[in-house]
Image (cartoon, rainbow, N blue to C red; front, side, top):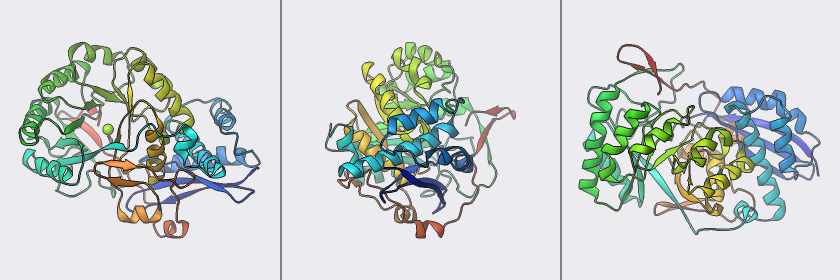
Length: 403
Ligand code: GCO
Ligand code: MG
């Protein structure tokens, strides 16, 4: 069996998605998600110019060999663009292999470790009251876990918090990066009040999560972790940037609030020190940005040795292809923690027909051979690519900051 053709499909049903389709000479095909939010066309160019020409004629069943060919063979290792491109190939090849085996992907990985996959949804509000209403809506919809982000008095606009109720928190039409103004002190004073209000209204059972989006220094993160301890968060996410993995050692010495990190990681080496030192509790690295199933499986296995569980990144800027493959992975992986879930728009769901289903705060994996997600190429053509940018953050004095 040989790879006969491979090509990228860029579609924007509300936001941009890049999909790689690999077709074999036997007529079987697989698809992989290659979406890197705000840098979509860089991955398209990498795939079209440097990866696809080397795939033609190869045996699609040799997933491991192709992975190492693309990783080692390029000489230039790692990096989000490269690893997203490799991930898309890897995901498409696992899709093909599972279809050939006539099995849903989770069976090929080792079968079910659980019947359903717990997810967390996103509640955001411009102030605490609006936020509590959003949490209530999620609880009514059956969610057992909710990420909670509220506007902070004195900060005009925060990425992760929708400006108006019901709006997405990341405007898809920002051609060039918007600039936000950030105040760490205002934020740090406000967050404990938010979680006090959440516990008071919803009691102890709801799992609550919070994303700091890399905006603190280690000692500030340590303070926040301590301040929210009484509200026992499921996790505090990305409390500092993790290029300096040792920073987490400092935070860990100060707080028992569980720590999650890794949505921007693209390889095992970004997480190795964090995992081996048991400085984190959840690893967020997902299939699309870290070399696909073949590589993320290695991350999860290392994590399992150190009581670190998975909590895959799953915002709407990852396509249903990534979500579908992730649900298979989550159903299998022994050290599963939780899966992030932001519902895609109905236009996106129509472009990407899928067999996973949401039920009572959980995902139930489908039984279709492969990863269970397809793409309607005709429909995809109706939504042309539109450049969209993520915002940047500056401190009140104008200093460029993490966002
Ligand atoms: C999350 C994230 C996202 C990212 C986005 C960037 O936890 O879901 O922080 O909101 O910012 O995926 O592309
Ligand atoms: Mg995040």
